[in-house]
Image 1 (tube, rainbow, N blue to C red):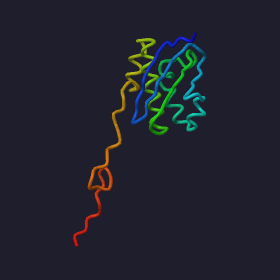
Image 2 (image 1 turned 90 degrees about the vertical axis):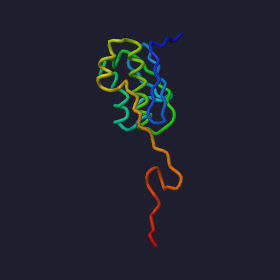
Image 3 (image 1 turned 180 degrees about the vertical axis):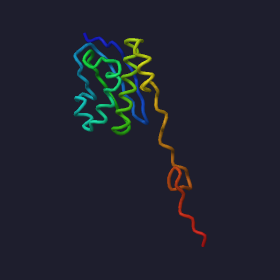
Image 4 (image 1 turned 60 degrees about the horizontal axis):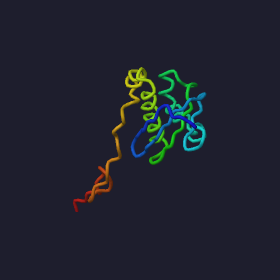
Amino acid sequence: MIKNLGIGTGRRKTAVARVYIRDGEGKISVNGKDLVRYFPQGEHAMMVRQPLVVTASENKFDILINVYGGGSHGQAGACRHGLARALCQIDQGNYTALRGNGYLTRDPRMVERKKYGQAGARRRFQFSKR
């Protein structure tokens, strides 16, 4: 039987990630695919790994991530948030390093809704005086 050492839920925009940390040698799997196959942009793959780099635990754990909703950038942010929470659950000593880098803070920025009588959230329809 496989035992999860830590579980974390991460959110960013409309993306939600569930992160499971297990004993292993540093394999990261996102929705059944390898990390670099799921996030082909190097920036997003690096973003997911940041909490592991800060806590110096890159090759200690295998990480399984289920993520849905949003786009690739939001999903990468959700994975990072969930991974940071799961690492905190494993060892409270990681808390100060993760908090200091801002990985435990849920980014509250969301897309503003479109209002009636307007072209978008803030954009108005063109005004005609005559």
